[in-house]
Image 1 (cartoon, rainbow, N blue to C red):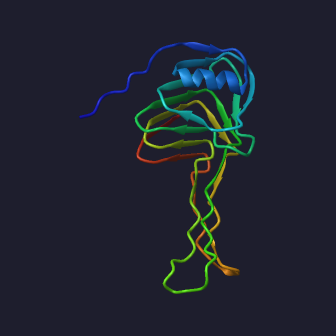
Image 2: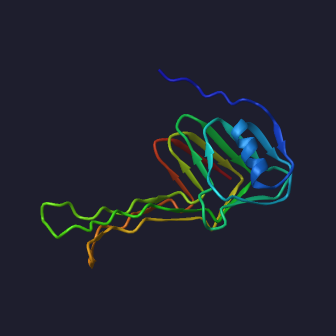
Image 3: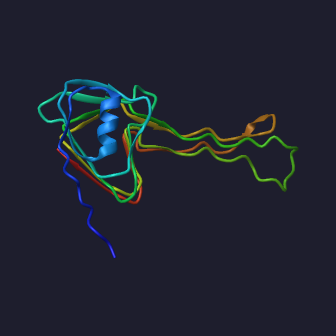
Length: 178
């Protein structure tokens, strides 16, 4: 059986464009109005673990990863919506593969491949994501490097893939509206 997600209406108003105010509001969940103008710089990914609706109407708000972090990770079964926001400079780097530093022996597995980089701005891991009247600017992902086999630099595992520079969605619903 399946159940419909219920969005709790808290109608919080975030008056300061800073990470701590946004993070506190997101942790509480519900409808969150961004009542400020400016750029919110994130130092770590915001984990969306409950239903959240971010609404930036009537304001000019940019949420930025400063080229070093993914902005949002949406967990399975939750509803997340973004309205009238700019999501900028999000970045996700996949994990590097592990090196194998033992002696060369055909019975040992080759070095591990790098892991994929997924969704610089947003990774949907099984939720329902809706993006309305928003801009996705200069977000990117990069796969991790493959591992090395001992001291032989040309014998490496495969590099990881880059999936979704701005948004990657796995086993979830993604809706984009102008």
